[in-house]
Image 1 (tube, rainbow, N blue to C red):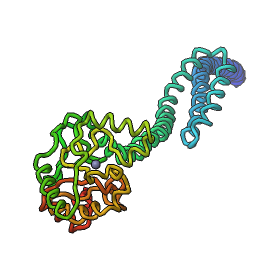
Image 2: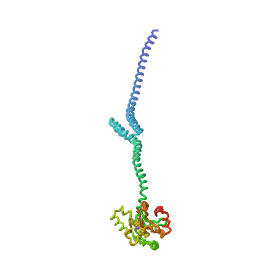
Image 3: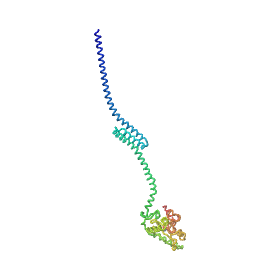
Image 4: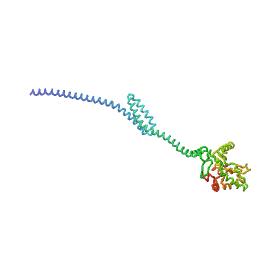
Length: 340
Ligand SMILES: [Zn+2]
């Protein structure tokens, strides 16, 4: 019985220590393994965190930078936001000197990425602004001004084109040779005195003689060169504005057509080409009968704004009996009758 108890008790003690030792060993080993596990994972976690934290920090900065320009893109005023945004980028570069490379790369990439949207946003309005001011200017310049110039220029150009030096052929309207301040004759147009007009004048002179009027055509055909000297003498004597009212510039004289006859009375040179002629009986007879011989009073009174010349009671234009009679009966000037 004692052996059993002792043995059993002896055996119980070593078993308990053994259990303690084994348990302690297991616990130590487990703790060591656990520590090793934690150390490894901790280092790895630290490394991972170290790397990731640096990258995330940059990413966060990038996100912040991106978030900053984001409102700038949203903001309608990109110019005002572009200034502070660039200052923020410089600030981020300054506080992080250690990560200059990353900052230099990231911000540049960010700037590039941001510049693209910004350039897309900014240049668009800038171009629009540039286009808007330029285009309206261009539009205004070409549109209103050009339209106005087009409206104004063409007639001026046409008139300029119709200078006696540039015009090639004389102007005929409804078969009628026209020579006035709007339609000049070519400087080279030199038909001489119209034989038909001269013949009609002779007939009229004969008819007037029966009434006691001794008619004379003291000036008929005048060449371009002759008109040059004549007009220049008038300009020198009276000035151009006055001369233009009673004397045509070279190329614009109806006398160059050979169909215009300045008519007076023999022996009454004082009334030739003078206002006083209108009050003479000869002038009244001509005014009432000239159309029967194919002549019309070309520059009647009160029609200077239409004909371009003041009343010339002595200046008659040969049109032929038919047309001269029609114009006379119409009471219109040649310009009015031909609607030119
Ligand atoms: Zn005349």
